[in-house]
Amino acid sequence: MARDPFDLEMSLLLDGLLDEESEAQLRRRLLEDEEAANAWGRARQVDAVLRAAPAALPPVDFSAKVMAQVERYEVRRRWRPWVIGLMSALSLGVGLSVLLPVLFFVLGLQYYLFELPVIGAALRFAVEFIATAGWLLETGMRALGSWLMFLSQEPGALALVISALVLASTWIGLREGQRAIRMAVTEAAASHG
Amino acid sequence: MAVDNDRELVSRVLEGDHEAFAALVEQYQQQVFNLTYRMLGDAGEAEDAAQEAFLRAYQHIDRYDPERPFKTWLLSIASNYCIDRLRKRRLTWLSIDEPLPPHPALTSKAPGPEDAALLFERDGAVQELLGDLAADYRAAVILRYWYDMSYVEIAEALDTTESAIKSRLFRARQMLAQKLEAGHRAGLVVVMESA
Image 1 (cartoon, helix red, strand yellow):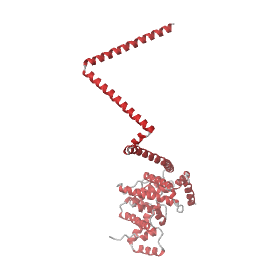
Image 2: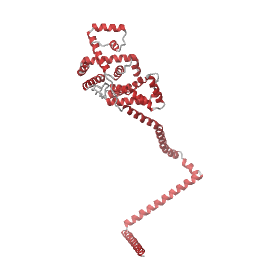
Image 3: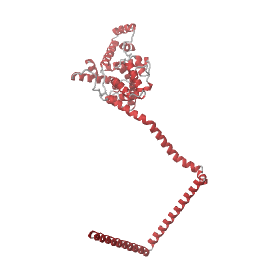
Image 4: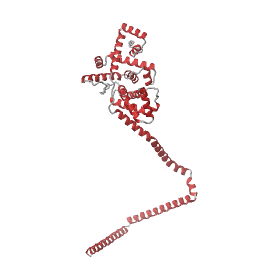
C-alpha cells in the first residue's frame, strides 16, 4: 500500500505549530513531491471549509428550558431524603410485620404472655370469648342447617311453615291498613275541627 | 474579565443562587449548543444534549476547579457526553454514516436567500464531512476549529494527552483529505469549491 502523502508535519503546519526549520523542509518537499503537494492542497481546502463553517444557534427558549430542568432537579433533590426515609420506613414496617409474628410464635412468647397477671387474664378472657362465640355460631348454623334439611325432606312441615308465613304476612298487612285508616280519619277530623 | 466573572457566578451558584446559573447558561448556551450540534448533527438531539450538559454542570458544580476556565470545563462535559452518546448510537446500529440534516439557525449577518441557501448547503456538507469521523476525532476537530482551543486545552477537555490530540487531529485531517480525494462526495467538492 502506498504511503499517504499527508503527514503529521502538514497537520502541525495547519495549526501553526511547526518550527521554522521543519516548515522550510516541508515546503521544499511540497515543491518537489507532486502527490504531497496535492494532499497539502486538499488538507488546506478542508481546513478552509471548517474554519469558515458557521456556528449553530440554540432555540430562543433554550435557556428557559435548561432552567426548568434545573428547577425540577432541585425539587427532586429537596424531596429525595424524605422519599428515601419514607420508603425505608415502609420497608422496615413491612419486614417487621412479617418477622415479628413469626418470631413471636417460633420463640413461644405467647406462653409467657399468658403468665402475666393483667395481660394474661385479658388474653384468657379473649380466648374464652372467641371460643364461646365460635361455639354458639357453629351450633346456630348447625341447627339452621338441620331445620332446612328437615323442611326439604318433610313436605307437610314445609307447607305448614309456608301457610304460617302467609297468615303472618296477611295479619301484618291488615294491621298496617287498619292503622293507616285510623290515622287518616284522625287527620280529617282535626282539619274539620 | 470573563474568567473572573465566571468564578464569581460559580461561587454564587454554590451558595444556591439560581439566577447566577441562569446567567452562565445565557452566556454559554450558544457555544454548548454549537458543540453538541456539530458533534451529533441533529438539531433536536443537540438541544437535548446541550440541556443535559448544563444540567450535569449544575449537578457537579462543586467539582469545578476555579483554576481552570469555566468554558473549558463546560465544553468538556458537553463533548464527553456527546462522545458517549455517539458510541451508544453506534452500538444500537443507528448509523452515523447517514447524511445528517443541517440546522437552519446559523450565525450569519442576515444573509439573502441565495447566500442562506449556499450557507445551508455548505453547513450540510460540513456536517457530512464530520459525520464520518469517529467521535473522539470529531470532538478534537470541533474544539480546534470552532473554539480555537490549543492542543493542551483540547487534551484537558477530552481528558487525554497533548500527543493524543496531535495524532487525532492529524488522522482526522488525513481522513477528510482522503475523502475528498476519493471523490465520493461530489456535491461536497462542488460546495467547497464554491466557498
